[in-house]
Image (cartoon, chains in turn blue, purple):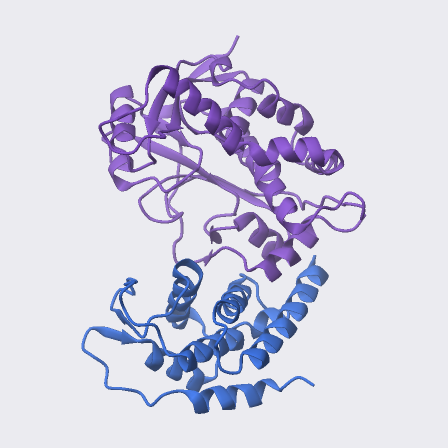
Length: 152
Length: 289
């Protein structure tokens, strides 16, 4: 039996590390993801920018770093984000993928979030709550594909 | 008799460059020159392959870069037949174009001088030097890598890129599949390249009729083969049809091709699809017959 979405979010939120004081000029992945988890809302407008950056890091560079410079430039020597934070990123992406599953994703941005969530789960075998996140992603994928096919 | 146009085709060996040239030939258009990039098997900037070595490298490149279309045509004839049948709603005689692309193809058969340049890739200074020395004003990019700013910023040079997504809405990678999933139909756009991703001024953009290529269970190969067939035949032919019919054929003054800026406040930049999503998109493109 699948774990409900709300339960997964609660568990992922509980896993997040306490926010460390941000270094000036640095972006903390943990802080960004905690804020997105806390808001619980699907991003719109400029709120999408940070999630687009998370997608770019996952899709293009195949990893999330613990911290970034202000322009999100990847640094292969930088330490990776903690697995709990990566699980938080997957959860944020799945929350933002929900309009695609509901057939309410006119520009495809939610489907893009689902794509990055699928990759995050695939790329990180040691992800906390991996099975639950994967199950959520598969359910979202099935619903999104059914919505897409039904709309055409 | 072909009409020669002031366009240089920067050919990166493979289906895309071949589709452009085959479609231009069908339209009675010849570029003023072709610069054929040949992957230099030697390392180091001072030891360029030349003479018979260059001929050998060109042949090796021809085999490597066209391996999948040749193999698909040999091993999956019914798939290729279904693709040409499906594409017939988008362009004339796709089967003939595919034959032109892969049967006895030679870059020397398109009414334009061919300059063969041994390079390690787009960042090789020899490529920039070759383009600068050619005096090209308008260049058609045919893929194979990221065009560096050093080339794009050559004085007087404008570089056309064709993208299988409707701009500015669909940017990024795997855009033909994203277009099918998100918008229910393919889109194609031609724009003038900048050092940034898919943000140059548009020469044209269209959404095409929905595209579906029904396959029986017997015709249907695995997803990796379907994905490769997309880039062997479908994607190159859609791009070629668009740029030739919508940009090159109607053009009167190539020095002042009409273009318009994109609205960069809209649109989504997509990335390569995860296998699960790619499988769903391929199922829409290749539904069960």
